[in-house]
Image 1 (spheres, helix red, strand yellow):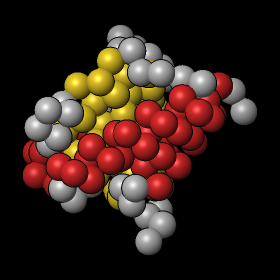
Image 2: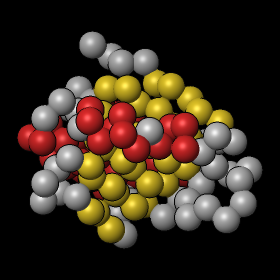
Image 3: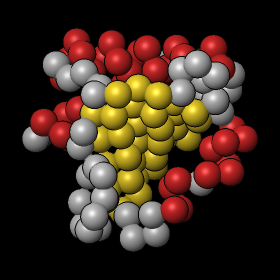
Length: 119
């Protein structure tokens, strides 16, 4: 398993640790001119859960994959948090912005992998 795939699996574990759901991995590697190769998209139910998921993702990535995000944005209002790990960008949404932006379908050519909820 390459380092990017290991990072993605680690991020998913961090999301699941805090009961994040509707996890989708979008593989953008075959699409030209993208800012990253993979998106990991998930949803939480409240701003507090969004913050907890972001903290868990950061902890899991740092501890298990030795990776730190180059940027984290959106923690102030915790409606949509984006965490940039260069090749992988993590998006953690509340339901309304998740439905509105619909990132999973914005990239029509991406290969989407849905991760089953664990609860």
